[in-house]
Amino acid sequence: MHADREPSTWITRFAPLVGPGAAVLDLACGGGRHTRFFLARGHPVTAVDVDTSGLEDLRQHPQLEIVQADLEHGAPWPLPGHRFGAVVVANYLWRPLFPPILQSIDEGGVLLYETFARGNEAYGRPTNPDFLLEPGELIEVVRGRLQVVAYEHGYVERPRPAVKQRLCAVRTDRPVPLCSSW
Ligand SMILES: C[S@@+](CC[C@H](N)C(=O)[O-])C[C@H]1O[C@@H](n2cnc3c(N)ncnc32)[C@H](O)[C@@H]1O
Image 1 (tube, helix red, strand yellow):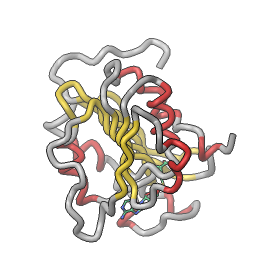
Image 2 (tube, rainbow, N blue to C red):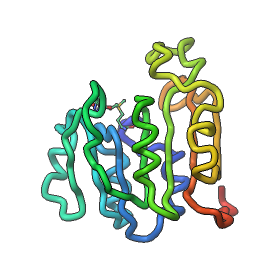
Image 3 (cartoon, protein in one colour):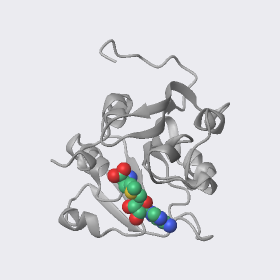
Image 4 (cartoon, rainbow, N blue to C red):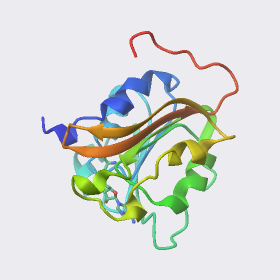
């Protein structure tokens, strides 16, 4: 399988924190590598993208809701009032979406976010700061709202050399069970 089509190891690592059968939102889902991963784990998934053609083979899946929507250009949030047990965002950044993303996470729900970050300019696209997270930015976004379980910002070799920032955070005041295999 092409490395870009495999689910991110950051997402798969923390997937056990998503409650059994909890609804998952895959935002800017692309070809649906995380949609497919969570469907296979038995979660209902809402997959949103401006271009949903990469999900053609999944259209009849009973656990999948496909939402074709522009998330930018002043368009309204496509899922007002919806709450999820997990929101997954990978390789996508549009800062005005941070508030609705946070509002979409249910009590006990998980935010799994991984995208390109400052420093990536040296390795390739994106190079535009609008699409690169600043150091610590995802921690600031969730501060006082979600409990940070894990955060990283640094160079990755695979699937291609890049600088990425990654966050796993949970909407809870309780201690989050850490897995010894992490
Ligand atoms: C690099 S891909 C990441 C896809 C997927 N999250 C993954 O990690 O495999 C970025 C995705 O953002 C989507 N996207 C870009 N601009 C968008 C917009 N204005 N509204 C909704 N989706 C958008 C693209 O269609 C594309 O599928």
